Image 1 (cartoon, rainbow, N blue to C red):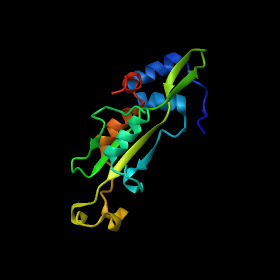
Image 2: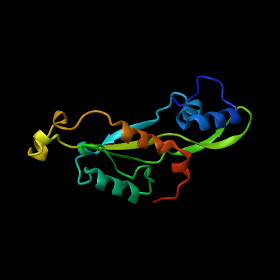
Image 3: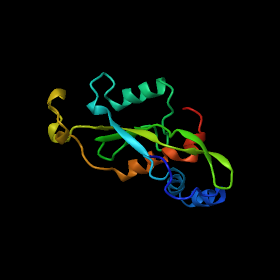
Length: 157
């Protein structure tokens, strides 16, 4: 719901936690809110289903993309490609009355390419089980930077 189930923190506690972990600090002020959702671009039925075209569409419509590790994060096998918007932000009033802009949620984009043994299938024949599955830690670390102060304060690329 985006509402905290604990007391609002004071600003100095938020700052101290931010120095240890920006993600933990994010949780402190956002509670159980949704951190991000993922759009699987390969499932789109349009000409922007490739993640590169989708990223251009997103930027052309005024959204800032996370540049940590490059806009496009690619798995070592090249079959999982990801990007994300920079989190939106809003004002939050801490328990001690200090108001600060804090990161909220962001949107991730992922394209899962067909596995090598299915690369010769026609596009309309490719099903989800033909595509690269799983999670890529190296990509995820950079995607989670979507809520970092560096990304929030960066000017558009």
